[in-house]
Image 1 (cartoon, helix red, strand yellow):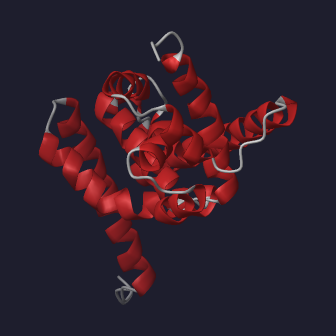
Image 2 (cartoon, rainbow, N blue to C red):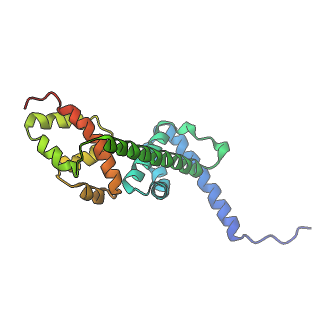
Image 3 (cartoon, rainbow, N blue to C red):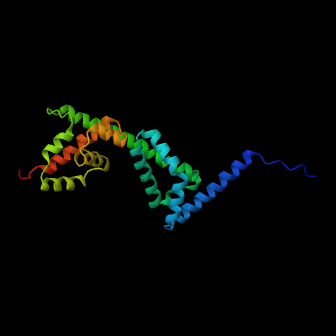
Length: 206
């Protein structure tokens, strides 16, 4: 004789929903392996906001958080087969990738800041606001072309700061405000970027 049927609980519904999402996620990855761009967009719509929120909590820099998430999802696009179903859900895999990259990015930023401080500390020349020096040093068309070429070789984060400084004429404090970055980070990127730009200007006729 069978007992009365157990009434479904909210927990049961949550488990069913989670299972369904995992099946859908794995299907998106399967389609992604075949180069399905719509599957990629679907995966990003589903987990992009959570990924950005996680990256921002770790990096505390919105601009850097967006770069981190872009890198993580680009890695998924390039190699969806890296996902191992036996090690958890697609969501936990994605968030783990974002977390790992965010921690690495913070470490790189800190190392970059320390290097820039070492450079500044060992230099006898004190530059209050390098924006003024860049604008004064580089004002001829051929020099502008050289700077444009050198900018193309800079890391993205340094290039963005130098572009705002040189081409838009913004001060470091204004750049920090524009990019939602700490002023110290802007100064570090400026020092490292300007060293490369100065190299590009060497040898030009005056």
